[in-house]
Length: 130
Image (spheres, rainbow, N blue to C red):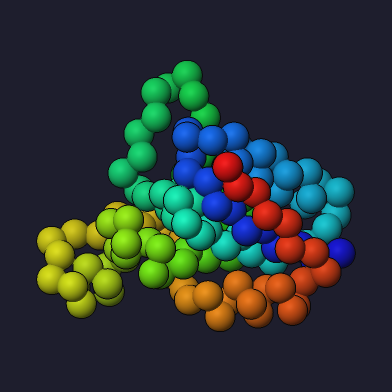
């Protein structure tokens, strides 16, 4: 089956991010295809390259990046929610005259149309939120 995940919770504020990551790993371990993870609302904070959790806690941003690279999972971040919360990639930082960017690659800023597309292409769209 083809899956997509919609993640609404910020890392370290709620269990949503950690649960979504564990679910994603379980999917691919069972042979399913995880097309993408769409980060929306406070879930966009999962894309911040500035996250620096204590060493005895999981580094959720790095874990999402590893999942993406190991299993070719697209990490899509709602651009409107990200900009509203101060997350910018290099292009948006330049467009808004900001001195730097903080969206970690391979996370990419996209629109809500991508979420709709995932909902139509995938067999299941599973939501994790606070």
